[in-house]
Image (cartoon, rainbow, N blue to C red):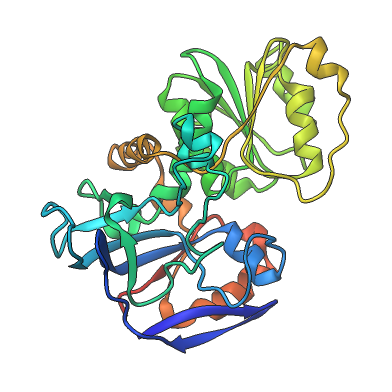
Amino acid sequence: MKAFVITGRLSHGFREIAVPEPGPGEVRLKPLFVGLCGSDLKTFRGENPLAGFPRVPGHELSAVIEAAGPGVPSEWREGTEVTVLPYSSCGTCAACAKGRPNACEYNQTLGVQRDGCLAERIVVPCGSLIRSGGLPAEKLALAEPIAVGCHAVRRTRISEGETIVVIGCGAVGLGAVASAAASGARVIAVDVDDKKLETARLAGGCKLVNPAKSDLHVELRSFAPKGPDAVIEAVGTPLTFRQAVEEVSFAGRVTYIGYAKEPVSYETKLFVQKELDIRGSRNAERGDFEDSLQLLLTGRFPAAAAITRVEPFSGTGSVLESWNKAPSEVTKILISMRE
């Protein structure tokens, strides 16, 4: 069978590998659609410190069960459409002991620390499976990035009627917009791309701000004179890290999904002066996937608008190359494995 492999910085190819056989407690999946993530682009650029070469990328997928190994419950029968929790957990580190396996110290995500989904067949533990809920396979492949946004909203502890800012309207940020809006918050979406902002409006954003065209502080204060109750940062730059702390209200909350690729200098008095709650948000839990599926099933997440391109498996390399040249033009790329 074929697998797409990132072989080094800006290099890629297809390799013939053996069809994997499921072991005890495992199932073999036939991927249907695989979403490309920003982490995949960083791996292609040689900028992902967690990924080595060669690496089969991909951790966002819809798939169908093709075979089951010994000990797999009968509910996971052949032909069932699923997505997967693409993270691993050790069960013994501090995070796992606290019931937060998404933050496992030794996590290995598909397509990052271990080979991922851009192959004609993959094997995963049956404990990582999540039923499709009847979603079409194309939409189901969006579940993981939306779930990451849902997890950030859960970490932020949003209450109905609060004003929430989401900085960054890629797929994860859009998931946060949709989840916060579904929770009853007034959501301000911030991005430097007007097309992404329009998609954020469809996801529930009630105010859109393009800081490349207008003053972010002025725009936020016109909508929330005392500042927003919480800011969710989904970009990962020093500028947006600082803006989150500067713009949030006194006694507000800041949740970081992205992480900056260089050191960030803060005016640290704001942490104490405002008595801020600052949290990180990593990966997602099963409950976040359930929330994600509900957003997709009810149409609260604008799947059609969020999907920039759908390309065949054979075109994966050229897609990565074009995405690398114009990253701001992409919200979500799906690879169809059905060819």
